[in-house]
Image (spheres, rainbow, N blue to C red):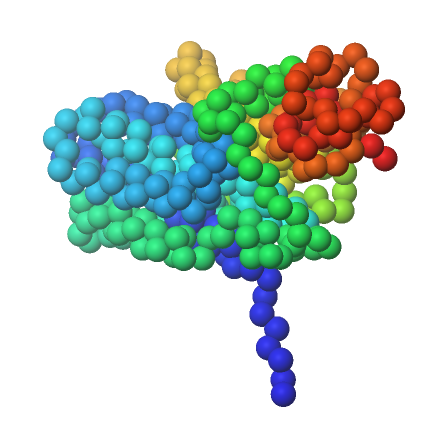
Length: 465
């Protein structure tokens, strides 16, 4: 009798996460399709409509660390389910709006909170819990879901808007979000230990650490603790530059910059779509490399190459897309978010089980960098009449990010910012630790510096060899 070998549940969880991430990317990108129809119907200025998009971008980044902490506290399934309901509500309620503040509330706040809860911190949580082998590769695939979501949703929604109007498109987004809710509730599992299994590639079942304190307190506490370390600022600084040189600058200003040189907007938009297409291949490849190469070296290489390409870009603009511009598009697309897998890996290396929460804050810096670059490049264009200075500054910043990555050093070990309670056993307590005087922590003292602990946390403790 032939035995059917089922895939490890980790792959099922990853597949459902991919679907949610594809949807989140598409939902977040939808306002760009609705901008002109809303302007035509309500007469709202482009600046007013863009304010909703700005709120969306900021909340998308700032929600991530709290969402990661909430996933530890209440479970991935509940957080993703609520996030999808927020997206559905934010999109669906727009069909009833008649004032611009309602657009900010729906698309800015509700959709921003919903998609931010399914941002890259969600990727870090899933891969950290379910994968040991191929962790970097799976991180790359899930990150690429963002680009895939935009590629899949935008053409479809643009066609729906043209044929049936923007309200139908908004309802399509709401319906798509609702369809994913039962899928996430059915197939998203919390921890492999819940099924009595080790993570994929691990050799033993590791019980899940119980939640430590409230979600908000843990998110803020992780930030305060991480902010006292050098690696956090190096990673956050590099990722802020990453956001500035991708979403903030190229994603926002490439099309108008190309149009300044006589290139049709449709051609420029097609080139930007190609960036997203090659981004999928680049991010998956980066995940594969992260499993095999020091992520510090990868980050330094990615940022340095990006900087060089941005310094060359001003000379490539013209009224047509020449071969040199196409080479830039392919190269830049491969490097677009290739920085994510090694950054996630380094957050996990430096901050242990708190890595996903800390990465959420690092990702928030990415969005802040994008917001500043989007505004700054616009001011440069208004003052100087050209984007050239913005490209040169961005190129120099990317080189600086490469330097920050080189400054990252291998740490002495994992720093767990939110430790789980200890299992009973023999632990070594430093002689100068104030924990030595806490009542109820020591049952017997066998020799100086050694205690038996049956409960508590691992503050100042280290496992005895």
